[in-house]
Length: 237
Ligand SMILES: Nc1ncnc2c1ncn2[C@@H]1O[C@H](COP(=O)(O)OP(=O)(O)OP(=O)(O)O)[C@@H](O)[C@H]1O
Ligand SMILES: [Mg+2]
Image (cartoon, rainbow, N blue to C red; front, side):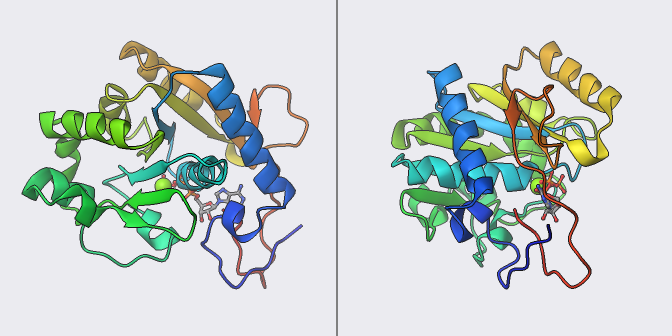
């Protein structure tokens, strides 16, 4: 099934909250809360680029906000920030400005069309931006965000090419690990999980993105989305 949409980059849980896809994200979000009662902040990562981290982070943030939580979605992928684009937001402020230039948080955090969901975009990025994630200022910012919101979700870079997600893992309560079921490379996933374990990162859930519907290996699960047809403006994320 190829879904056609004129708003191709807005998350599916917002464009079609009644869909089975949105229902799957709600189930995942509930499972995360049930299995990990004290999680106030988690990051979303994967072994390699393009496995569906940003789509997963955005959709989980939306369903959590729809469940009446105060949620902040943070673009902590300072290599390939995508969230401002996905939420159709144009801004020149965000995380890097808060950390580097002491920009006030309330100036950098943006409301979204989803009630209860705020977005902290990446801000302008440069070659040294990722080092901000290991700063004391970042640790202190995360503490502040956790006190202001019920849930803080970080969209992070992949584990294998760069160490940012491992660095970020020190400041969150858990990690949601996404595996692209359509292009799955078991060895890459195992290597990434091993790296996470080495830094005592706590994986609180795995998500098989684009995976087969009845795959028993995933303890969380999102529906299979067929590849787009050539005329589809796609995607479902
Ligand atoms: N379940 C899905 N069905 C269809 N398309 C999807 C699905 N998940 C992700 N995509 C598409 O795959 C591409 C990569 O997804 P996404 O940006 O979420 O991955 P990512 O892991 O954040 O990538 P990167 O590592 O580059 O940040 C995007 O074009 C997205 O629209
Ligand atoms: Mg991404």
